[in-house]
Image 1 (cartoon, one colour):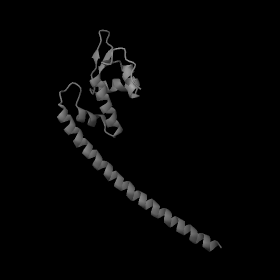
Image 2 (cartoon, rainbow, N blue to C red; image 1 turned 90 degrees about the vertical axis):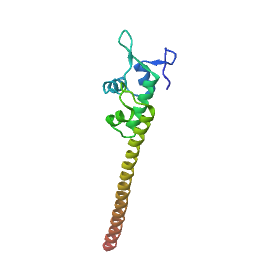
Image 3 (cartoon, rainbow, N blue to C red; image 1 turned 180 degrees about the horizontal axis):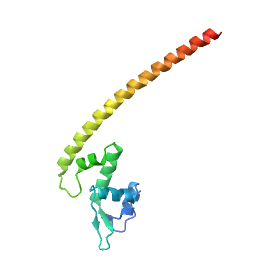
Image 4 (cartoon, rainbow, N blue to C red; image 1 turned 180 degrees about the vertical axis):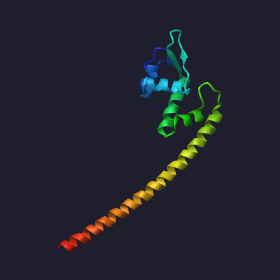
Length: 137
């Protein structure tokens, strides 16, 4: 859902971002405490988020969905207050994604082996049950 934005699309309130990204304002504040985003403040100390903050939040949420920790996400995208060029950010992300793919492929192989073992054991149980039924007759 697009934010209801009274500022012509250039800035967002915490509530607008939270609604758009389907997260709570406290989640956004948590990411701010971790240094992943750093919004500007009004004279009244209200947080004001720019499009770059929305983009960073989307990257953080995607990283979480992919199973990365906040520390790993911070390594990939950098802290908000540090300068990281986009190429460096892409290179770091690629390395993390390569490692995640290796991990997932390993887990997939393990799951395939477990699935095979379960199916084999299930087949043995079915055969044993048939043997017991024949003996009862």
